[in-house]
Length: 347
Image (tube, rainbow, N blue to C red; front, side, top):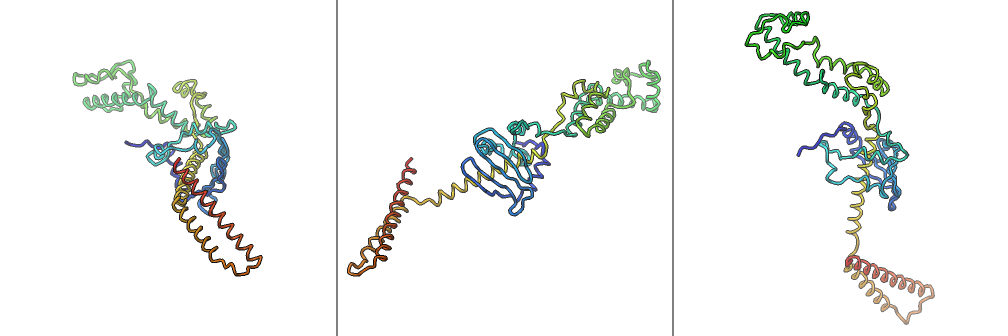
């Protein structure tokens, strides 16, 4: 199955390039209270921090600076992208619901995730022009068909096409511009009653798009052109100047989302490795039992080697007593650990 194209492919490519050698540094980790740093070790450029506390996540650093989100008790769970959506786009980018993530920005700042984009404005203009009844793609196809028939007729009558056009426009009331159409041209009769404009729909679209480009520098100027230009208003509608969304997600917000996604993934990998290491290092009940048995035998041998006839000083006696007490306390602690391990396995 072909994967969809990432609409922000260039932004994601830049992010991947700048963070290819980044690693996770866990500065603090206590339940829902965390301070994580993602950076190329020893370099703070293109680095960022993730700070979490119950119900919140904040970003700061060289990039992704100044955002705070709130939704779930553990915000790393909220931002976690499942395996099925991790490699969603053809460039390997994850499937991030930018709109939904932006809604969780605190302080009523969700609108700041988007900014005016001249490319979005011009794409709106281009799409509307291509769908227009008189200037759109279908109108251009019709125009080209009329021109093709007219040129064929001119060749058959050995008349220069430019001369024919001039004559046709001069005789606007004449159906065929003075030409006699024979039976072989019957397939073009239905077109010859229509005028052939001096400029094609495609050329007119290009002119209007160029005019829009002159007014694309700012959102205010773009909306003013949509509202005040008579031809634009007639083509795009009187409401386009306030109905069209001319914004797109700001690259700073896009980077913030990619930063959070990478931080969550690295932290989850860190947790999994920590759990695996703990499980591997935990002694089995059999191992604990063997250590206890050897320790008890050692104490017994030590006591058996004590010479009752020897006169020990008070200091020597105290040291021996302390050593034996510590050994017995250690055996008790290890035995308790063995009991807890057995209960955990059974549960």
